[in-house]
Length: 131
Image (cartoon, rainbow, N blue to C red; front, side, top):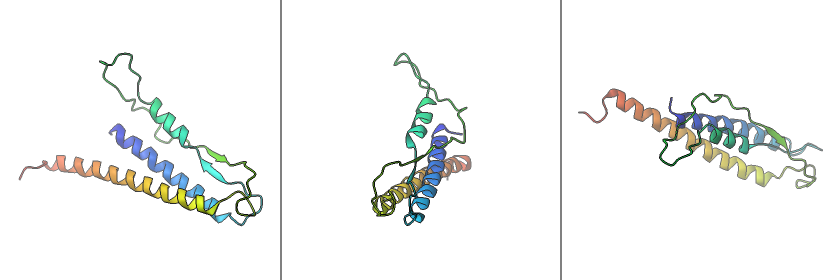
């Protein structure tokens, strides 16, 4: 499997978790003392950049470690700020809706790219542009 597909798969997993966290925040907007949750994107980025071998010379070919964990663990962090944006807790509905839209676009991008990869692979198997 292509390393790019693996990265896109990790992105799709991240988007699914992020979507659940945002939905949970929106569902609890009227819950007193609820603390807003978020998913750490930095860990995902670090895991994926660490999977690429470092080269010591610019003439070295970059290699990609394909043995990385297929199920990365995403860290859910609690927003401990004392902002009382909704009047009840620290959930800001406008911010959650903006993050939901951004996450949806990110998910659509990754799923389209994976679909394109497999369509290309399917065309190659069928004989490409031969008529």
